Amino acid sequence: MAKRNFTVLPVLVVLMIAGVTLFMIFTERTNAPDISGDPDYPHYVCTFERYCVGEACTSNPIYIIAYTEYVDGQPRLEIPGMDPRATLDRTDETLTFTSTGGDVAGRLILFRDRALDFYATSDVEGEPDPREHFASGRCDRLVSP
Image (cartoon, rainbow, N blue to C red; front, side, top):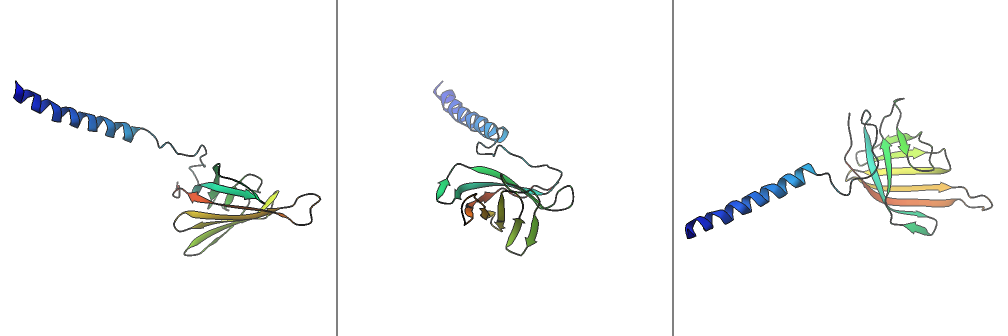
């Protein structure tokens, strides 16, 4: 009888490991953004981990989408306050999206390691100098159709 107890314990451990593994495989990641792009067009879903307007900064995540090509064949940015129409310059190390329309105008630079840098400005009524916007963060891998 003592021999039977020695075989039950390893079997239970293996079953528990298999159960935890299956649970992890079939559940989604918990830090996934609440936003998704159109899967028919190549795009990055990015997170501003720190966003500042002037001296006021926040660490609350802000999710954005950067399309390398959209319905009209042109790049597109989905960033609050910015015109979605953008231009795209590619180098070996970066993708630089530029949008000059909307209340906020500026550049989003995506680096090869998927880090990002954002700099933009917005005009403030009654103030002579534009207000600066800047952010840092990361992007998920490119989603390709």
